[in-house]
Image (cartoon, rainbow, N blue to C red; front, side, top):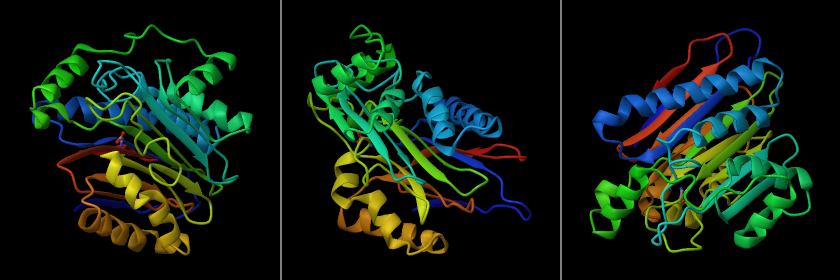
Length: 305
Ligand code: GLY
């Protein structure tokens, strides 16, 4: 298992934005572009935070930036299902209010994370799927795109490789997520994906499921997961970490225990990014790569893959 831990510096508490660009295998020649993508996304979220945005808005800004970047598997550049279609999953959760919103198996819209935010703000339900998600997005004022508007040549090539049985070439991860703690200690999480390459139509992964791919509660931490959703869902990975930590101090140990269990008992493949209200950042992954970046207010952005 690989990990990165980042502790807040001394002095007054400051905000921190943490992002991932997906767990999987990014080939060496493409790692620079993934690293650059997550660094830009973290910096944009931090800029929003410094300008007065809430932790949730900063997380959404970072995720929306990666949805617009075709190198990631979310928004533009999303993985295609076995029929060659884009179906989007996304969710948000606010740690201060414990409110959440999500969409699943949704046809192309410019930003699934913004639709998930609208679901949360409407407050009637937590998760809309399929035609219901499309209808919700349209009545909320989002513009539906042409079916292939988010499809890239690279996504088509990955699908062809998957359908030809060259799985290793097809799966590069690329789900995107962000967790943020503001200076007041409020945390939030946001995650967005096109799902797995060559998935069956209607397949939904962990990303839009609160407690699996996304979770946030000010009494413990905010979490965004990435990897193969089937294992993350069966392990209830985000809930497992949040509930395993009886206080923010215990998050590091809880993440370690949960990730070992995820790998050993659920055959899980993936990773998590976590931030506590005090700004402790914990990242763990068991894949070859998981692009990530940390942008603390007043410090340089750091990134890795
Ligand atoms: N973790 C993304 C998915 O499995 O859909």
